[in-house]
Image (cartoon, rainbow, N blue to C red; front, top):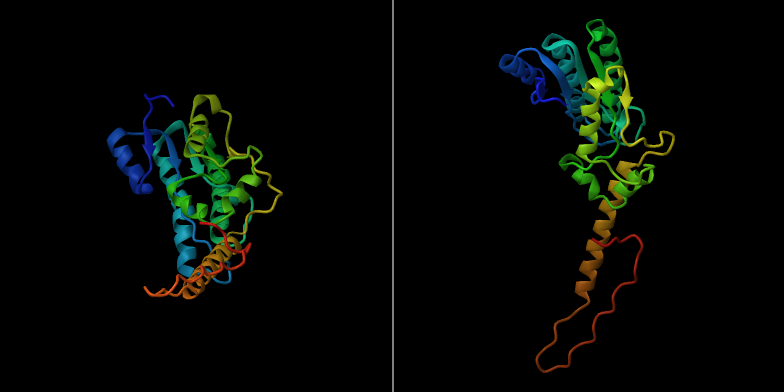
Length: 246
């Protein structure tokens, strides 16, 4: 992106845009990149978790677009960071999938409404990206590998991948790109999405099983007295495929 353009890194949604325009005047580009995920099946998800996800992922995007309409110069651009989950459902991801699908439709409507001013509106749909917010998913055995297995390039994304796609969409080179949802990793849309809830439950169960087995093993070893011979080492329990190495 050219450094002679005013660019707002939106922190705080509408208030962030207001601060940027007060400091720099009309803007050329606005990128909304805010999101949270509260996994849980629809039958178990709390209303608070649903509302929190909607507020950050969808309402925040709406407020950004609304303020962008007033803050941008003509022929500016807006990029909303949506997600692969806006098009592909996942068990335990009902709130997140619903909000990101909403962001994609918001992109389409905003592009139509702002087109008369030459303002382009696009969305980026990343797959799994390594960030501090997704670190927890890497602790669930096999989950990231399942994501990668569904990625033709055979790797997870990085923040730089998303940033470069976003930078292109805000540049003059993308002046004909509008109302699009761009997927940097091009995952196979028809393949099964990882079952996050089942994976997490299995990991939790395996951890508890490993803990109980360790407790039983310690209970079989008796301390020897100074005058007695050292007891034979306790025989380890049989290996189990359900216990994963940590």
